[in-house]
Length: 87
Image (cartoon, rainbow, N blue to C red; front, side):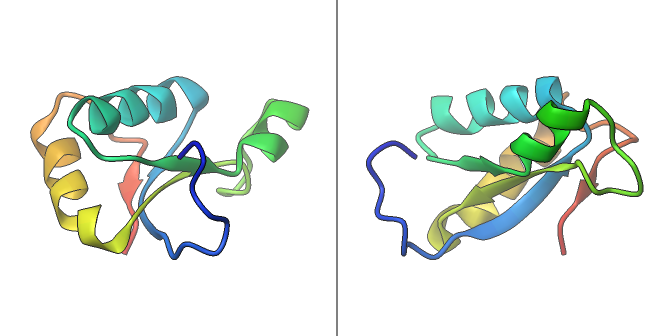
């Protein structure tokens, strides 16, 4: 979310198991007009591993975009058995 104020409230809608999946989801959402940000990239990029969910990449959107974003992900071919939707 380029240029968005840091105090903006965001909600987690998805946890990607790797950077490729996270970037695909980001592309899907942004191509449908939904800004998103990824959280947790630093740990994963530094250590290149995912252990017990410590290096999963959280996909965050504005609260008003959350439901539509979840629907887009669910209806896409991006959903994988290693990913899980955030509650």
